[in-house]
Image (cartoon, rainbow, N blue to C red; front, side):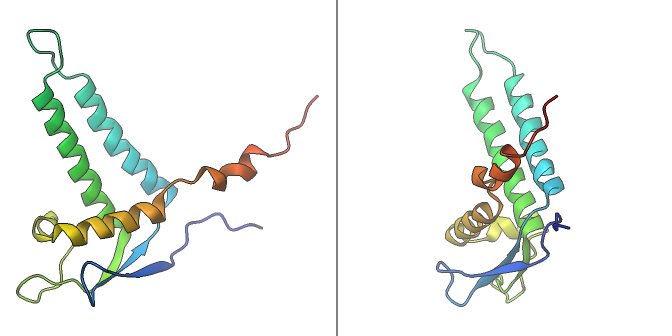
Length: 141
């Protein structure tokens, strides 16, 4: 029978933005990907049902702040759930805890952006991967 569960394998990435630093990433399960989408959908719905200003247009500042909240919540989810191991430390030599949002507040933006790119690459939904499902044999009566 074909295996249909997410792999527990991790993928080690040496960080170009932090020489000597690495992260080990794991792929999200389908359930976790749906949780991730749910975070985005809830925030997008909140933003979409936002109030209009006096001229009948959406408040640009409100929309900007909602997008910032969306980005932060998605990043927190990704770092908390995808980073299985790493060797990244703070200024005092303490290993950063990516389950704690405070660690993300002190993370160098170049390092964070590189990790984020790696997480996206690992968890992107590739339409080519679905091609066997699209070409499934159907019965006709």
